[in-house]
Amino acid sequence: MMDRQDIDQLALRLVSLVPPGLAQAHQDLRTNFSDVLAHGLRRLDLVTREEFDVQSQVLARTRAKLDGLEKRIADLETMAAARGS
Image (cartoon, rainbow, N blue to C red; front, side):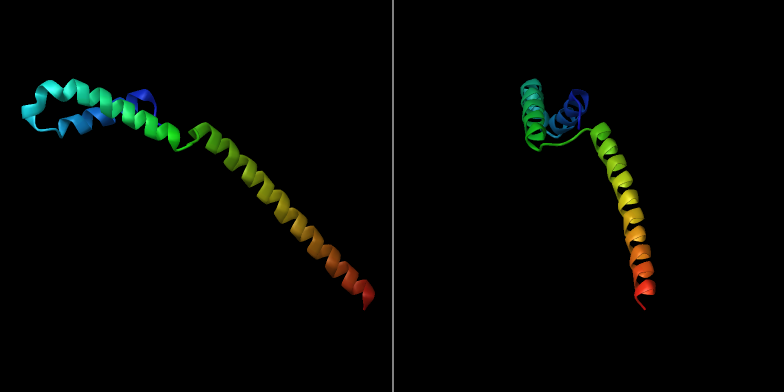
């Protein structure tokens, strides 16, 4: 997720797009942009990179176990079919 510094940098970039005639409003706009961006990102229910990486590792281990079990079942089915013939 974006940290406060990233949000502030994005808000500063948005403020830089405001016409120069509104220079006195830049600080207010920057604060408002930061608050709106932070609130919006919190509502997105995002996970951190660390949480994502942990879940990716869990998924990879689960996938490996599943592949192994599928192979084992296939081997057992082959053995059962050979005995039944």
